[in-house]
Image 1 (cartoon, one colour):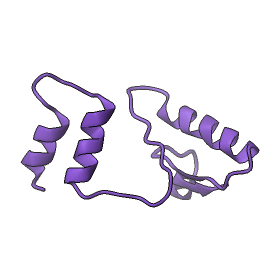
Image 2 (cartoon, helix red, strand yellow; image 1 turned 30 degrees about the horizontal axis):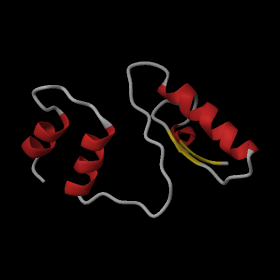
Image 3 (tube, helix red, strand yellow; image 1 turned 180 degrees about the horizontal axis):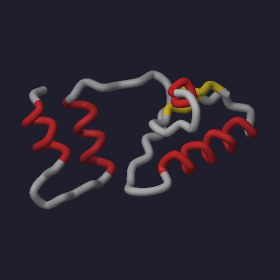
Image 4 (cartoon, helix red, strand yellow; image 1 turned 90 degrees about the horizontal axis):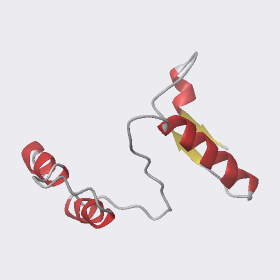
Length: 82
């Protein structure tokens, strides 16, 4: 996919951000995963929400990988496993 195709697909004129649109984008871009993923989007609170979900899933016994863009001391904090 070209950059214009990606932008055109993610930012349709009617600004429809439904789950089905995102799924169609992933399929068209040939992005897939054999493991369950949670993609968090929004303006504020993404890192906190991701950390909360990570803690909840770990408490339930799941092995969790966490990828966030914010860190305090080292960029190594961006990727965490359990």
